[in-house]
Amino acid sequence: MNLIFLGAPGSGKGTVAKKVTEKFSIPQISTGDLLREELKKDSRLSWELKSYMDSGKLVPDSIIVPMLKVRLSKKDCEKGFILDGFPRTIAQAELLGKEGVKIEKAVLFDVPMKEVYDRIVNRRTCKSCGAVYNILTIPPKKEGVCDKCGGELYSREDQRPEVITKRLEVYAKETEPLIEYYREKKKLIKVDANQIPEKVLQATIEKLRE
Ligand code: AMP
Image 1 (cartoon, rainbow, N blue to C red):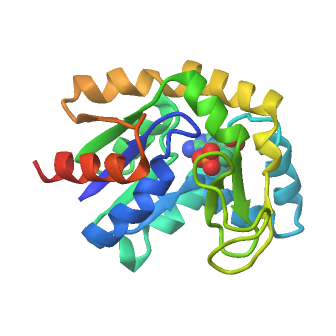
Image 2: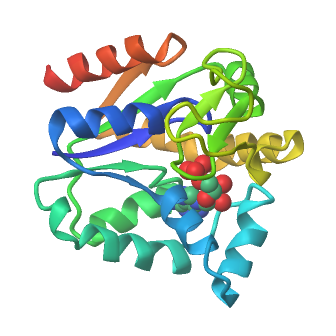
């Protein structure tokens, strides 16, 4: 089963994707995570990526597409995968088709824009294991410390208010048209993501099993 998880930054699609991978035994492929791995290297490419990502802009297709192709060619993708954060434009969706990547369903995680803004501002990520918290709704037991591994919690550069605004603008302009694109292809599944994570997960699994 090849799936796309669609939704604004902060819609919670990545968190749900992590859980769905366990249920359906298919990997989550987050292009944001692939890029953040690359950022850890001190290379010319990583500096170029940083300038796009820290300002909330999309990274050019000439960089992200080859990275994604390498990832999709790995053995764990043979039975399917969840694409989290790709495609982000109609052009990227069409590229998938040209590459012969067949998509069964595109799941839209639907949340009001005001809600996603608040979620991102309050998000904290563990530097060591990547676990995600929300200081208001899912706080760690000890402030600034990861419950799972004791790592340090931080707010990513692209979680600054002005960058969030830019990311949401880019989403509305470039990514939202994909909703209509997949609806016309009769592949769209809509999940109400404005509820607690457990309920969003449950709704997603029910809709995927239908
Ligand atoms: P995410 O973690 O999915 O919110 O992605 C973080 C950042 O990575 C985005 O703001 C973009 O700069 C970049 N990025 C992730 N996926 C893509 C993509 N499919 N196309 C272009 N840029 C991307």
